[in-house]
Length: 95
Image (cartoon, rainbow, N blue to C red; front, side):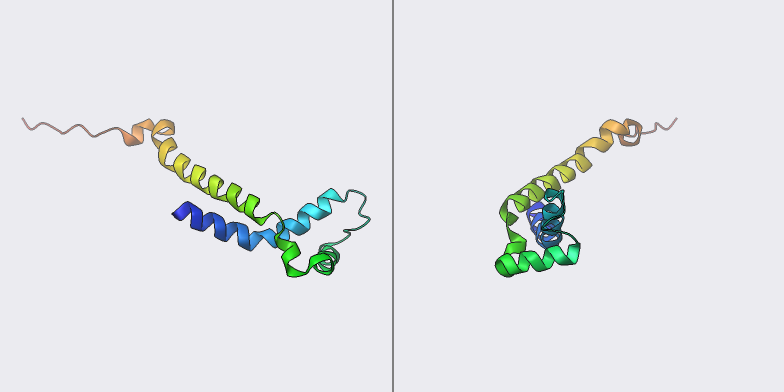
């Protein structure tokens, strides 16, 4: 549940700027997408606010998977990387 919520929130909040970045990267010659603000204006003129969310579902799915995998790694890797910190303490015997 947490990975889904975190992935959806992260993808939704960052997607408009990612769309602008991706358009600018794709236009290597800078013929259509010249600046961040100019790209935003062009995208809005092309399709309104919805244009900023093209590809949202694919990116959101990827973000959900990434958050899930990061959480799983966070839980599984520490005992492997730092085994001494996770050894069970031997009960001390009293003489």
